[in-house]
Length: 347
Image (cartoon, rainbow, N blue to C red; front, side, top):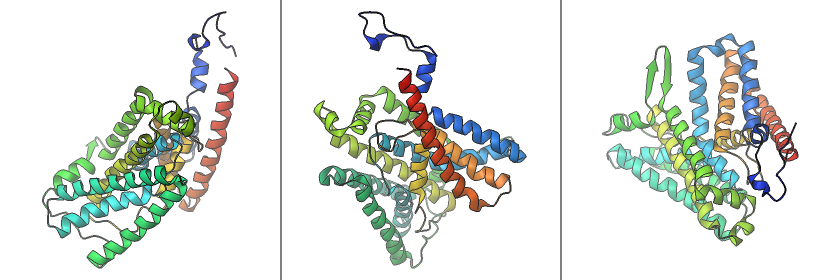
């Protein structure tokens, strides 16, 4: 292995960088290697895994996780967590459905109200974090518990059951469904619109991280808030913006659930926040902040989709899914640590 050394008197930042060094420096390298290994493994043990219809199912599963994993990855790069992300998705869907039904309004009115409520929850998380200086684990755990109780309590209070009434026959439902839950066929393959939402969110998140000043602020805050503040980085605005980004994507996921199934169960979403965090970690995000990528979160979500469906195609007992998920998380963390050490060794 060779490393380029700067000529005498030349700024080392301007020294040429080898392709290998650039490759080892990418946060998502370990997840790409892991995705290739999972793909080859299930291709061997489950022949139906390679069918086109199977790929569409895998992409759909990955997209439902990936839509949330991307903003969660940015939040983790900024050094914070959001344990309320999974329940917030359900809250968003419940607000849209119950407001539209109870007010007999066009469903787009409910969708708009849901957007405002969900963004307010994200702002609340960020505001409380920056004002109280408490760990994000405590703040968002409190939000998680409050939303879980509100979802169940309000749904029972308004509908008398744990689920909402159907809004499929209300004005605006068809157009909202086209935006959030449509699907189309290409030959024998059925693709859902969540895949497009997923790709778009990852592209925007990557652009923000790598091409904007806000991306520099996110890395700086995750690397050390005090040092970032000393250099003029708006730490408070950056953190609140990251939490509102998670809320925005929770709103998109919530509308997909609502317009896919017409009704919403108030107990859904509990535990999904860990899936988003796992996808981000598998994709290369460090738990300590300051390092990671949105593309890596997409690869992590794709690994999740391959594993959850590959077990079914291999006709294994799905009870083993959590074992594989835990093993992948551990292996991904170890692999990412090894890749980082190799990257630092080449400097």
